[in-house]
Structures are given as C-alpha cells and as structure tokens.
Length: 308
Image 1 (cartoon, rainbow, N blue to C red):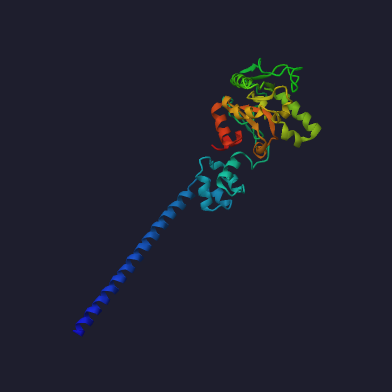
Image 2 (spheres, helix red, strand yellow):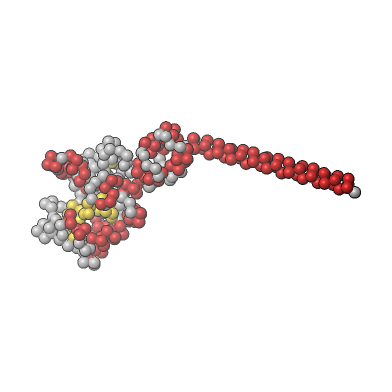
C-alpha cells in the first residue's frame, strides 16, 4: 500500500514538473514571439520615418526619431524647411513648426519672396514677402464715405483721396454701417499708398529716427500692406488714431471686425510674430472666412499661413 502511494506521488510530481516545464516553454515562446513582433514593428516604424522627406536634415540637427516623428506627422510640416526646423531650438513640436513657418527663425529682409498673385486677399506682405516694384492694384476705388475729413477729424492726413480695392471698399462700408448703429463713427485715415510714397515715408523715418525704428514701425517700399490696397488705418469718434484703444467703442471694433473680413494686423502681444510694433489702428482685409479663423484662434496672418 505504501509502495503504491509512493508510486502515485512520484507520478504526480513528475506530471507537475512536466506541466511546469511546458508552461515555462510556452511563456518563453510567447516572449520571443512578442519581442519579434515588436522589433518588426519598430523596424518598420524606423524604416518609415527614415523614408520621410527631410529626415536626414532633421536627424543631422540632433533630433531623435521620436522627435522627428512628432514633427513630420504635423499637417503643416514642410519638408523643404526641415533643416530650419532642426536648427530652431524649441522643444514643443507644434510650436517649433509653427514658428519656423512664420519665419520667426529668419532675420528680417534676409529672404524676400515676391508675391505675383494678388487675387488671394490673404497674401502675406511683410518683411519676407513683397509686392513687385511699381505694383498698383487694378481695382482701386476712391473712398467716398466714412473717410477722414480735414478740419473735422483730429487724425486726418493731407492726402488727396483715400483708395481701397473694390472688395475691401464694399466690406469697409458694411463694417462702418454696422459700427454707426452702435454710435461708433469710424473714419479711414489711410488706405492705398504707392510704392514711391512708402519709399519716402521709410526713408524719412530712417533718416530722423534710424533704420531700426523705421523697420519696426514702417514697412520698406513694396513690403507695405498699404501698397496692396487691402488695409485701412482708422480712427473713430474724432479721437487721435494712436489712442483709440483707450476709448469706449474700440472693444466693439475688435470683436466685430472679423464679421466683415477685417483683422487687427499688428496686435500688442504678437510683435515677435509680425515683427512690427503694435498698431491699434491698422486693419487688414482677408475675407470673412479667413478673418473668422484668425479671430477664433487668436492668430496673426502669419500664423494663419503657418498653420497650413
């Protein structure tokens, strides 16, 4: 009886040992299979990343594959700017790409691109994008309403006639009609300026205050939005144009301009993006659709283009 029991115990022990060995083998097999799958996926992932346009430039800038993956997966990534993305030392991938797309990594006037298609009312005109020399919009119309009248409005300048492009003119009239119902009487103090006028303006300020001052507050000829006929400088209710943000009514202007296709072009908190000083009076027409996107995201026109 005792021998039989011992036999049974040995058999059970042996079976348990065999079972344990079997479990261990299965676990080891599973481990190596999973590791192989992971390695394969990782290999495929690495291979995919390395095949992306701009990979070499990004890697040569010291970025890891993980950082590169974040950058190239963004919808506004442009492979031709890969070297610039790599050189721009900003940790967050979205910020890095957006800032480079806004040319924040470049020195002003270091790389000027000529805008040849003026049918896009959102076109950039700044320290990196210029209109052709001698450019004159084909559809300028004189502003016969809501324009500054000398002797009646404090901020009026001595100009023969304020002009805007036709689409801008129509939107501006609609904007001013709405404002007048709120007892906000908007007046344009400047619109289209010729290439030669802007050259004289910049040269004068550069000679009196220095080039750095002129470049901060006045565009160089061909790189002024006024040359496009797409912007308008305003005052309202007879106030000095450079003090309008201090008066009731300005908040309404800021919160409603986009409904008519206008944006505040040079906000106080975006000087590092626009590269121009704050101008509370300068409004740019970009069309209602783009203006809403810019307003909703608290963007500048540079950031609007940089998001694409």
